[in-house]
Image (tube, rainbow over all chains, first blue to last red; front, side, top):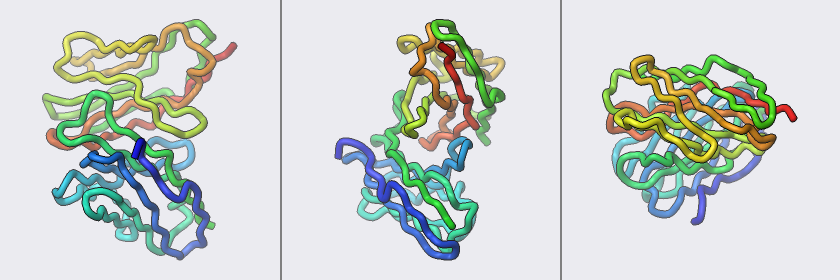
Length: 116
Length: 115
């Protein structure tokens, strides 16, 4: 696609429910990243997929968070047993193969998650 | 571990004036890259400028320039001739450990341009 596509754009869920957030990167981009941005805060790195390598999960805040990337393309971020502190904008980004270029990532428009 | 620090939560600048947004970093890598992004109220992240650790010249992109002081580990963003549309959050970021492409972001500076 022309850009990084994220769905849904908004999600309201009840505390304790599981949610899945989807990211469709730019075609040909082998690297995919998930970030979380809480209200008024910076971007918190969550997880990074690079081609067929094992993902870097070092940023996941708890074992309630997991992510998959199927076929080297679409990624799903799953949050189990959501808590109110999970409320944030979840941003996905992708980049082409190889070393990160000087123009950085291409970001999606994010999914705003609200846990009530 | 990489760390990015932005000490200015908010800044104000008069329209048409220049403003400097501070960013300091910490890394043990010899090769690294520094990025600045703009996030308007609409929420999208817009890439502004990049500085490589081995670049001898300070990066410039139109009205944006990066004041890179390697010994002091600072990479301040300078916006010249501020415009009302420059009002936004600005984030400094550094590429992760050598060989990795994930970026670590600072907490951001909210810039407000005053007419």
